[in-house]
Length: 383
Ligand SMILES: Cc1ncc(COP(=O)(O)O)c(C=O)c1O
Image (cartoon, rainbow, N blue to C red):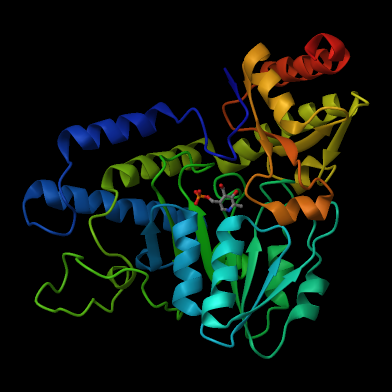
């Protein structure tokens, strides 16, 4: 199998991730922050070290302001539900994933927030000037997809941060974390939501949100934390104030190993390899006249993700053929971001998405290109 579905979840995971999880399961699998015995303390240490490792990756000064969740969807729900009050105005873009659009749409209906969706260009690029125009004195939050899961385009976060005024800036880093450098401070991000199982190379069931100093949220869930057990009120200190219940400790052991792997390999090196793969794929696609490529033409302006359509073929059919006849895994359709497809003109059928990862090779790109050429040129025999 040639795996080009890393934007859904990355595969394979580094052996160190599998090993860390298996080792944790076999030796340390106690409940962190609860009991006082050495296994529980060791489990607590793993959770703490994961927080520290993630903090270092995103340049978060105080790791206790990283709240672990089970994925970025949960983290975004925590941000929106924990921050927004009736009458608050939110600005977002037409490139957002359903994990942003659905909770915000729900809050429009049930909490009376106001939502403005700034249209991105047909190339999948958001213009900060358009975001600035949408701001009002009541704008509480700007929500931006750091890298589109449909076009791969990287949003101008720094520029948006400079025009945000009194609004807070929340970034959905689902597709960027682990693929491009993110320095929360330097980029001026107030709330950074991430998922562990994509380019951070961790397992599913991990993710979180990093909160800049001074930002607090109402919790989404309250309950046991292992701290202040004598009180029936939930603790008010970080990170316990926004976490409750036994965490996914095994997953966090894996996430730490994934982030460690990235740091030891070097994000610059990873980015270089992924860009070279993307360039090879895009150059090859440009030579097939039936294929239209969406998003920025420059691999430097995107994460390693390429969306295409093939004239005369539904997206799903191409994905099916690639999988069945050539062992190439891609994803077809709307990728949980219908508005992004309206923006680039591919709604309702969507695109065929090749999302590349660190472990892909140039040979694999060449196999996929040859497969596409064969599918297109043998159209009749396929029908
Ligand atoms: C941009 C974006 N946001 C949010 C998500 C949701 O990620 P998760 O399922 O890990 O919560 C995804 C991926 O599916 C995504 O690509």
